[in-house]
Image 1 (spheres, rainbow, N blue to C red):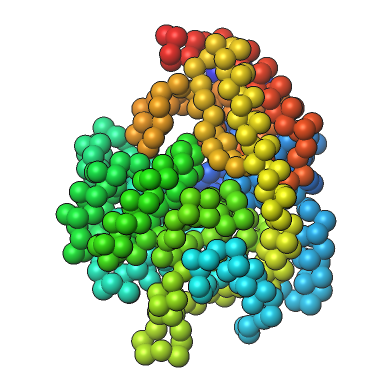
Image 2: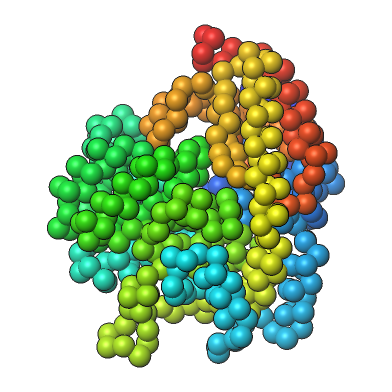
Length: 447
Ligand code: PMP
């Protein structure tokens, strides 16, 4: 381990210096736990297209794109142009704008299940409001969520995202576990935890809790725990069950919306009651949305008796609406086809690299998204991913890739973005090849 970490430290002295300075002003040095990295996070000075330059001036290929948000890479001319045009007219007003109607119309056209929507600033707010609408609609207090799925950082979302399986109850009846100090027993009491891709156990738990459950939220790609897609028949069964039990089904498509023009729901042909969106819909600026069935969304209508209020100083800010619209315009069916082919090619090439080095490994994902795993075990849910994981190896891989000039997420997550061509994809595979060649310790399967 020391070798890759030492090389990283040697090549990023300016990031080390900035991190020391940051720690004097910012708690823990970073305002975002996910970018923390030992011995220090990478400081990026600028980015353009698929490339970023760190504080030492070193160029890297960005296969993370701000955790999959930047589907068009950095400083895309069409998006920058839209931002500049709006910038000259102002950024945000305590008034409605025409720009928000345009983006809302565009998103509704892509997602037939979204009859009406509201804008917010983060995926966190979008899932918070989707859950609240489910409670408001049903009058029931609890929300069911899948173990290992991430839905943002509000209280009801930070439950059983990354629990130790040893203390989280049986595989077919997981217990709610707080992911953070400060999450109250009351929040846990109103959270029901489900095992992903296990239809029988999910049905049993939902039926047992039918009188208190307002809704079920699911990230159909389980993107934060290894990018393992839902089995299509599992999602169909979940749709059938929630309908039967009168529960609101929420698809959290904050990440999965990038797998096709109509997101994952379009690919699978399953219609949720509510959908949450974020990341790519803002063209790189903080924009999110939640939307769905008209009767549910109309609970927000200020003209009704006792509406669900939705404040937010920057909701639907004009800058984000303009950037988001420009990003959506660039996402034509041809562009999705190309991203699909590139993602597929990368996943296949990585399988060959694993085989060449006789390393137990696999690459999961869908469309432009991929996740590298150092195991050949079957991955279906949070526990199967967690039990087969090799955190030390993952860390060496991440640091090794950084040293080889490639940026990706610590958990093995990466994404292809539209400015990438064959050259960038081949460079990624070549870097992975060199990193795996240098991994001198045997992988778990060979121990
Ligand atoms: N849902 C999912 C599926 C996500 O991946 C994320 C963020 N990674 C969120 C919700 C929260 O979004 P935000 O970071 O914008 O609050």
